Image (tube, rainbow, N blue to C red; front, side):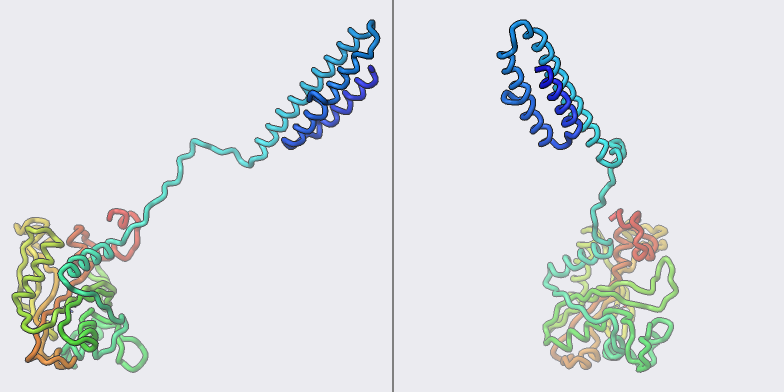
Length: 340
Ligand code: PHE
């Protein structure tokens, strides 16, 4: 009996040191410690031990059980620490989390969407045209005389294909021509898009900017409708209190032409730094479509009339949000963009 006890002790000890996985531990438990396991079987054999030896053998058996159980528990604990330290670098739960930023629309996109919302709400559709435009659509069909200063190298980026025919469009007005070439009247659209001018870059001017053009052509479209439409637009965009005024101006493709001012939204018209003490801020150019333009696109000026307008989206956004440097729109500095 004592031999068996010793044998079991050494076998169990060496097996315990090999235990790794949860299954290993369970198999060991079944083999040695369960009700049908080796230990239990040894305890069964107590029946055959002569009476006078029983106390001593019983004591050894109890010691064996205590020994195996404690080694087993010890190994289990050791294994748990081993596994825990296997998990790579320690996790520091006190380090602050990384903040995730929500994306948002660029202030120019927000402004354009607002402009689109206002005009589509009163029946205008949306059209667009190419940024590389031919001289005909950017100038000629818009009634620019051949020697008009706007064609000058100072303002226009010419595309160097040696034909001298293509330019980066200097305004969106060429889209008016394209829309009228492809559609019979009535026409009522706005035409947003990117434009380019060869200007010295400053807080006020950038080589690239965005415009929204508007065009409405039908029978008997009047100057009063132009004024009403633009006043409505200004009130929607800048608030119902805002005043508008129309100042005579000149564009080759409209006659009469006007610049539209709104009462200064910063000082209420009293005069401040932002309106240069005029009390008024210029927001767009507009006018009645020149009969010559109708002739270029094959519309009969005796049949139809219309109005057109064009505004810079940067300028509108600068006024709306009180931004004083146009370059901020193109630097993509998140500290700027996150404010909108
Ligand atoms: N195209 C003009 C500009 O770039 C704006 C304009 C558009 C004026 C339509 C009148 C009518 O300044």
